[in-house]
Image (cartoon, rainbow, N blue to C red; front, side, top):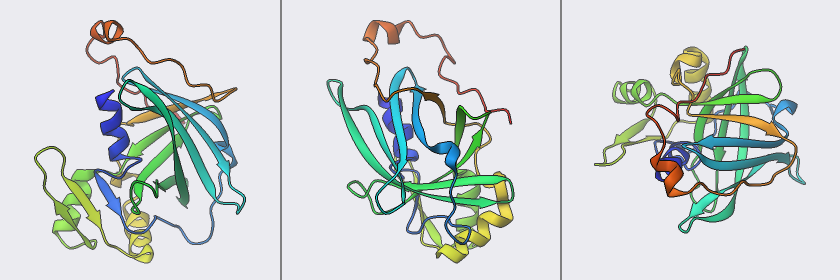
Length: 208
């Protein structure tokens, strides 16, 4: 459960890379493939996401997971902004109740029923922030450093258009598979977790 929260903190909560502005490619980008119900399995902790358009036509996601101790299921609501540069697809997302900043990710589809999320490469971004190639700063912490991007939408667009997929980790951090209904499976027991073998949680990359 702890690793699930840590990875979601890096992605959905923006705990590793935080951007004051979303990554946009100019104009509103849509991707009908994302619509519907999806499941993810991270370290065995189930998660279900319903991606839809709200009344204003904006893309949003309702994510069910065992966010609270117990474990206790809850639903978190996220805003999503899409971008595309050539064949590469990106998503910026945030939960306004948790932070006004966006997390950045690249995503890759395998067929129409599976997609993978790739986190913004913290090593690449950290080096470029320190070199002044992108506005922002590296905030050290004993547990997890944070990269705070203060770039404008235009500066983000220029940077990621130039760097492409190399600005994101090659290994995906999460994979989602389409499901017929948004029913969250029960959590695993501690006995199940104790039986896990090394490497069981590695995400298989999506093959285009």
